[in-house]
Image 1 (cartoon, rainbow, N blue to C red):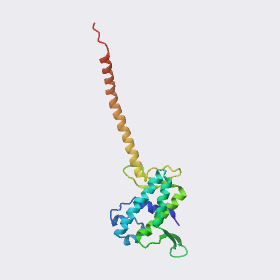
Image 2 (image 1 turned 90 degrees about the vertical axis):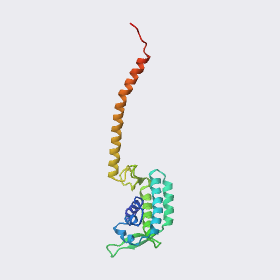
Image 3 (image 1 turned 45 degrees about the vertical axis):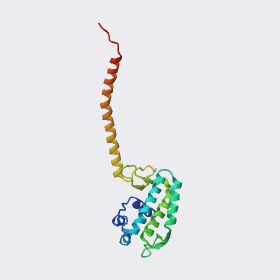
Image 4 (image 1 turned 180 degrees about the horizontal axis):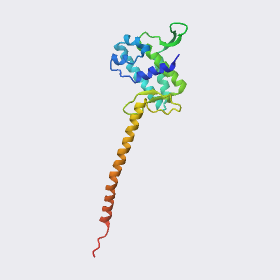
Length: 200
């Protein structure tokens, strides 16, 4: 069973724009394409609630609140219980599939996503749940770096954030240079004001 793939469906869900049915359909990969044909408005509501709770899991994990991440995942495992089954077409393609005991698309999808994230946490730790450090983004990600040092969800966000920080430092340096001469003049004027006037 590919738990990483299930965990990544959880990431995709948290990062999705769930404004309507079309937004929800965009979450489903090719493997889950059949779900897009069967989702309803009711599923959108269920997915939105789960999205918020899964985001909390990433927020807890990335801020060192492991026990809270575990508690939330345990609650989600109860809400979307998993019933594993063998899937495939022949002897060369049999594999384990995490499905749900419910009949709805939301129950089916969320059972796998929650299961995958739970296994990920047990395997790698809650500290591997990340929230993008770019304030304009906020996407979540699974930190697969060798030393758990990833801070951004993508290279694009990392580059954008580094460029913004570089520009801010340059602006600050320019402002500092322009303020320094003014301060020097003010200091000289203050000394001159205090100096005694001598008449020759």
